[in-house]
Image (tube, rainbow over all chains, first blue to last red; front, top):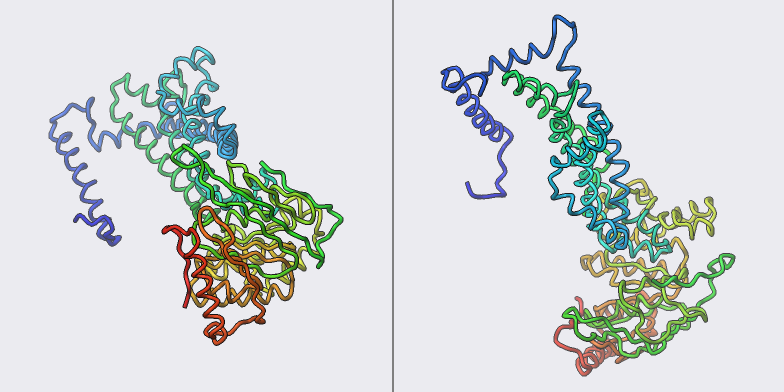
Length: 263
Length: 290
């Protein structure tokens, strides 16, 4: 029982997992089907499924509100991801490559990591209005403050030996960073990117809270106003699913590109 | 940060030799506690006049590696090195990585994402060597090195697919592919098992015979020093000082019988005596393998 290094068989692991998920489903069903709680507080499985079918196809408009929401949320996360990676990774690399750059930027960036990102939202609304720019900027800020320090730390985690060995072979200081330190840090940088992009899914509802016409966050806001708790559950479920899908896909790609690990 | 000495690019490395001189080298490091300095090298004078194999023998932590870095390697980071004294390579003072000087470390630092071939050709990614060695010549040199270190046919593999000894061969090939006139070795075989270490020692001798250069080899193993060296320089510890410096005429490879012979055993005892008489503190350790 208390052996952290004990390896469970796949079958055993699945069994324990089923037991825990099953228990929660059971309690949920007892509470809802037994009418112990009101559906506006906690919908039943059946009601959640009804919410799903309701959102999946709208007869009147002949569209799928859920699909449209997923599309616009995914698009926002995608655009923000491209920006986060193309701006955050170079900044982190430069910070990790030069203590001087790190000393200049870290007093500006490090406190942001513990800042309540959600509290920035009203500021962004005042600065940028309530359009797409504000939403993408919010996602960008939320993820980039995580990404930059992680990329920097990935660089710093590379043994000095690689830098020295390259310098000794005649590399300039920058070449030693470019050809020895950076390639060694890449698997960890890739991990950092995966984490940062996954984090965005936790911010998407907040980003879409204000004046979203579409998006999973908008579904949640809208459904809550109508006390359609089952639709809130559907949207949360879809967000969790998308986050998981993002993580698993990106990790698979990362393992394909970098089959070895940073030290 | 030292810029190093840049030799004339038209001056292709040839068989001719670079004189290396260390004059009154003193090296001090600030103490970790913050007050005062810790002197590791105490006025070292050494000169190397021929492409021979020179063994720097001393207890671990005596400053051998620091001394080795002075011979055209990357200087310790964050301190002035040397604190005082002068390093002269080929008649010019040198205060950083020297083009003609390449170092092989115990940790071989091969890139896991590159093939063995690409690892050996690694220096040619650097602007310094791009300009000096034309692409056709690079390929030829890499082929020759793969063969010389016994990794022919393994060029397409990755470092993770090789043993520790084979990885050290890659590191050695990566250094020699530049045809350096000075080869610095910082306990390169220290992490290898006894049998692999012996293979590597033989390989080094073979490579050196084919491509003569000045080898300065740091070790804390008396037997290794006696087996490989044309000259053995014995250092005491903290601060390090030369306590013995003698040539060995015996041709290589040197046999076990030679190692066990009375004069060699006497030589070994003398080295150990010198080390013990010197101010060697209790922290330093030398070892006699086998």
